[in-house]
Image (cartoon, rainbow, N blue to C red; front, side):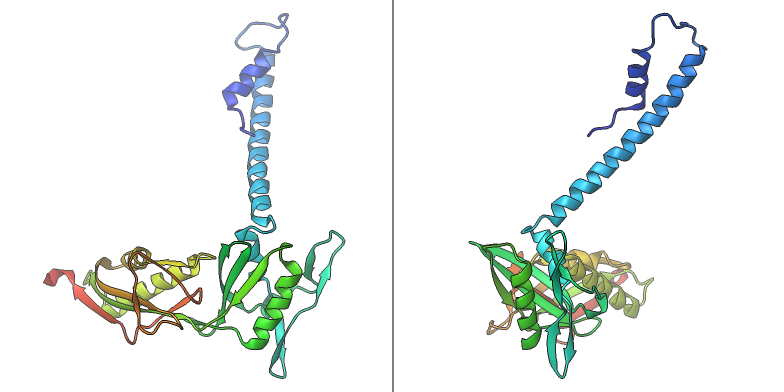
Amino acid sequence: MTPRTLIQIKQSLIDNVPATYSTSAVAEWRLWVDIFAIAIYAFEQIMSLFQTEITTTIQQKQPSSFAWYYEKILEFQGTTVGGTFTGDNLIVDSYGIVRYENVDESHRIITECKLRANAGTLAVKLAKYKTATENQALTASEQLAFAIYMNKIKYPGTTINIISKEADIIVFDIEIIYDPAYSTATIETNYKAKLAEYRASMEFDDSLYDFKLLKAITDAEGVISVKRTSITCQGVSDVAPVEIDIVVELESGYFNFDYDNSTIVLTDYTTL
């Protein structure tokens, strides 16, 4: 629904005014036309926004879409008792929807989820919280509980391949050109915060782009530019770090930054 402009609505009302009405520019009926035109305009604007919101919600909630799977995977919940993780109880409600009997966000454990589909198989790459700056693989009992959960909610005919490995490791060899109005400690805090924001914004895409890492750094307050020598990624099965040439598929679906083994030189731009 495309809402009409105020002028269009007003004209449509005027076109239906009886010919016997006064043609005076200050006739009373013209005031009522203005009042009703504004009311109709506001209503159509509200309905248009509502339609957009509903359409977006339906598209995101559509079963089998990446957005739907992503949301459902992050909703996975359970508890650990005696060292073994068990998923919370699922029920089928009156609408035929599989959901948790008791929703408890504190029981949710998935913090990273990446999806990749191929020939009817959905690869689900998972990780959970470790520290404020790192994630980690799920335990065997957590993966088993998650597999049971997915078998109950998945779209019929879909094969789920669950992958939860130790993180891919990102190592930098770069030079950051910065504004000396900021201390080096502040610069370090700022660019690490921006890199963390980028990682959090990836959602279900398991492709890591080198230019997005560099952009995240340059977006940090106080950073002027970045000179790249090398950015590598090493997955669990890689025998050696792999240079990121534009893009790399994350083996585990998530990554941690290895700042201890990175070479990050901070250069005051006034010294260049």
